[in-house]
Length: 262
Ligand code: HH2
Image (cartoon, rainbow, N blue to C red; front, side):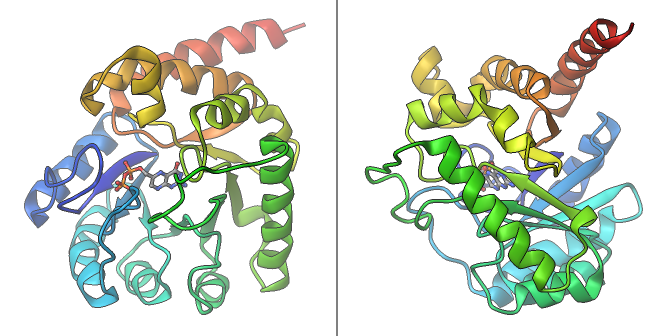
């Protein structure tokens, strides 16, 4: 899953793809590099990001979704039902909701009616304050229990279970230690029985380990986490650097397949 942030303020690529034409050409490039899905977002979720009104978010993403929909699967990264509805009408077939359908009471209905795919992500608190001293007794058990509960809620709201993926929400209300424990024990999230999406790309915990302050320099760290996540059962890898990650995952997957052969 390639990341396309049509925002002025995303933590690593804010402003790079804010103009429609730049965004469309970046999205095409991500498909060309081998992304199966391009995830289009019009609002940053980084701690302290300014909220974007629904109409402005819609205006950012809809023309980009429309232009990319013929090239591959397009996902809309939003927690607003109005934005999701417009993006689905423009050709998106996947809703990536970092609030796991809690952010907008109409979102579950929009997804159920569209019959599209949806990713339910764990977040502790809300983006503005989520990094202020997050605490868990057992982060993996708590994230798994949350995702199980949201999965049941989504099915009860009429969303087909086979269209639902789950995501532990790396960096969303988590310390460095929490992120690493979630990655190390990702098999416990995969045990929920739904495809696991993992989003580590260029995130600050990688900079904490490597000393890389510039998010663009965190691609090697990103790759390490995605290879480990693949081995532990993750199936969708949300990244900015598609070409590099794709090669690494192809080699890792071939190696894992050799081990599985009788
Ligand atoms: N991370 C971000 C945004 N959306 N969605 C899922 N499912 N999983 C994630 O880990 C995830 C996500 C944050 O990254 P990014 O889009 O690069 O930054 P920003 O929110 O600042 O636009």
